[in-house]
Length: 297
Image (cartoon, rainbow, N blue to C red):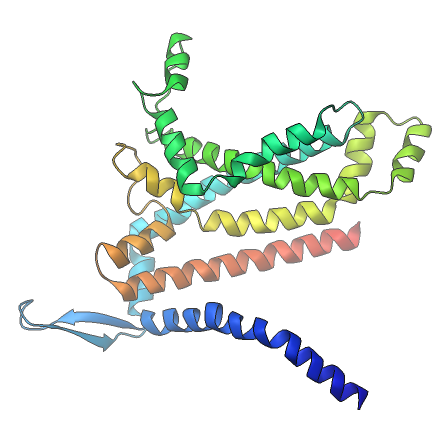
């Protein structure tokens, strides 16, 4: 009887979640998979109407065979190798600095560092486009007056420009996560290390960082997933800036262009599914890797 009541209570409490999950996740993914198996063709040498025909895996082979789509994954790889280490090291360093006994005005710096995350991504990208634009930006003018010339929209400057925007948006957010984890550490452990003669640097690296390993790995996992969804920042740089960022610069932009500029929804759905599978595979690899690290620790 008690087991039946527990099951009924669990069903009532979890029911709304599963309903929303089905409507917001399962059905859209299922529709995308179904859409990726069809393509639209025109009859009558292009003068007739369009008809939707079953194409099987043709959209997937078309996406994988498109050089622009493959190069988009190369861009994501460079972005991840550049952005993720800077984010993790920078956020962790700031959190350790705020957690140290030398830190002053902690609340002010927490708020100041977190505020950029409160700015919507599209607004942040527009702000930085202004700051990157010559003849408009005080930053570019200051750099030029100091003898530093750098084109933020050039082929070599586009990736660092987008990494900088992403760091500005997410560094403070992840710093807060690390700082909260550091605050949960038992202070007696840190005091014991200090009594044993460990300096502030040794305590931070050898004690604090290992104790918040789970938080670091969680942030790393979410950052990898978020990096694969790179879209807003390069899209803004692509619009009217003369940037080297093309309309198919990332897989997400490739799918967007296929759907809303070429009206090829089957190809867009196939590209999206391939990107989702890549994200799932990387999530599995990171989870297994962090799980083994945790067991060894």
